[in-house]
Image (cartoon, rainbow, N blue to C red; front, side):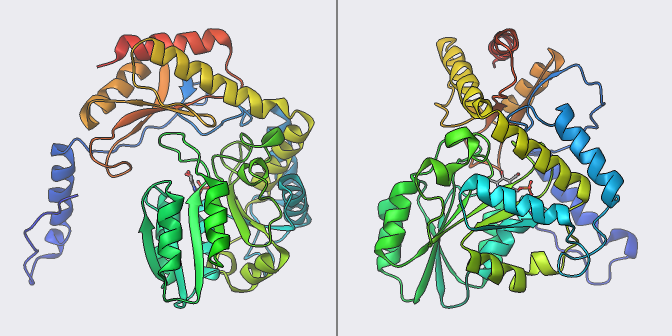
Length: 391
Ligand SMILES: Cc1ncc(COP(=O)(O)O)c(C=O)c1O
């Protein structure tokens, strides 16, 4: 993104101090990169394929009831940092059940997946660590790398050999390989087994952001580590969000007990942040219990993704081959992507729209969430709308 070149005069009047922001907005507008907020009415009739509600649980009565019960019992907020007053018995229940479900020793709940990623990256590294980070990693992982004060090597996307080479050449004694499990723009899975082998061959730890894998990948939605035989591994840590498949809010770090202890005592986004609100903890617990009782929900989301991708490809569009519940469809450019998404909305379908800086130049696209609760009729409707509005 090009910023305005004109620096404000040293003696600018107070009213002119932020003038450069208007110039920056103008530049974004010219590049087709304006972003605006739209309030969503509670009774929006549009079919939603833009959210991250992969299992369609956000309105499930058991989830909303669990949230309401938690708020009534524990209050509107958690009242403080997790280490002071912000840990309720409900937080501990969620951590125990989440760790058990995902097959790891322990879990630690944060106020967001973003905070969980910052915590894992900053607490598990130091200036004596090399971080090898996939080029397509989520912004929260990138920000964690920036905050870590470690050496960061940006590895080519999904390239275990390049990761191994970077680890072999390092001068730092410690190393951490970090990757998304499922890349949310294209919906492709990371080569986790190969990355783990590369990390192990060079004495490095592996950190996997399973935001888009929990609830969708692995047996019964137990996530990417369970899917690849890495759950419970002593050298592997996962982060998750509670805001996608679990239809709630918040995040967690999952891994060996000593990692969780270290984060509890040192991670700044854990210590200097108010604990997750009880309603969100309750909703996540409700969704987790539902997923345990109805494991077919995970496979159904993957099946919907395959069907959507097949039908869009058959209609002549450039749809991705989904490894989980995300399908992306290429657009010619950022402006066409925005116009396409707007046309879909006018026709009754909400879709995500990715363009720079969220994706590299030339990679603008629509992003579809293959919700596991979609009916065959809703899938046909979505395909019809996307194909008839295609640029
Ligand atoms: C891959 C990935 N990691 C982390 C996050 C952050 O999670 P949260 O929204 O809970 O902060 C997201 C969500 O947007 C994500 O897609």
